[in-house]
Image (cartoon, rainbow, N blue to C red; front, side, top):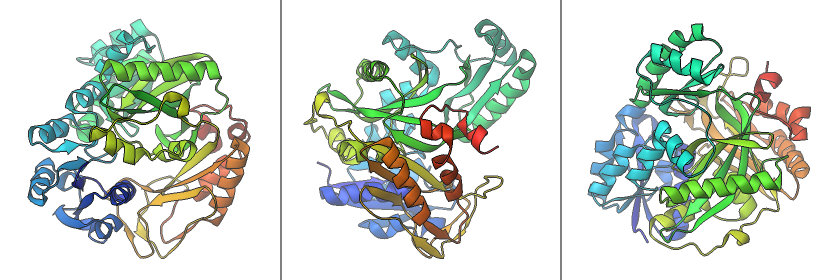
Length: 443
């Protein structure tokens, strides 16, 4: 097992990893920007060091600073959390070169699955259905030709995209040049990679993902599935485990496809395979080679500490479970509490003057907030994840309504009221919703 781990991230996920390390007896090293000097993860870690200015590029994305500090502090491992450097193949490769274990699947897998056009081809060869699409496009004219071949509507995607960025849906040939230029510019700025491809845009779909856990012995477990269809601007707002109104036959197909893909690339540790689902059909979307924000709902249902086992499998420890032992009998829902203005949903900032966290059996709030902390404009607007679990979906929805009613955050505008709208929406309550639900509820 690792002796000392550097957490190359901030906020809620840094706090989550530090807690897991403390339980496992691993010393922790926190890094922070000048804007995060008073952040919770800084005070929780055994050691903490400032590595740069407020902007992520000057601190949390500064590979040289992080690796130099890891060596100086004697860290034998680095946990990247999610976002930031979590799916950066260059960072993974540099960690390997310097003999530091990055908690993840390794540079080869990170690079292959991080380039979405390559991931699509690997999935196809593994027998996983993929939507018709193109390779990397040289220019807008090539995009036009590919779109006419695939058929409209199409979706232009940055190959290194994520977090809802680098995506445009195009309805006609006339819209291709502008959308191509927009995606290329956005991708270059957000990911440092302006490679673009396109796929046929499949409408009225659900976004369903399978949580995987794999060890170095070749064991690959599906820890369950999650529905992440409640999205705004391609960013998830609500996740639930398991996906409602999904037939067991289709669920088993998704699990088999996800495990086949993981085995095809020799996957180790924690990862997620995402699918688009419509009726009895499904298509591969992407593979996330990291811990996901919504891992918490799966933990609530299965009782398995995903972060702990991510660390254990990265250290070479074999999984003690079989697929048949993975619990699937309960239902969990997660609402992402974000700092935003209610009307325009733009990110909000401020100082937390009052915070009351809901309690009770099977209620969990993962956060780095505390009374007096500052929410700055430099980072993602996620403030925390409110998660509940119950024996049935109906009971979980009732529990979430109670938790949302009890949740109090003063000083920073947030989206609590938005979540309450979903908990009272007929389409959501039925479980028969798709990725267009947010547009219908919040229009």
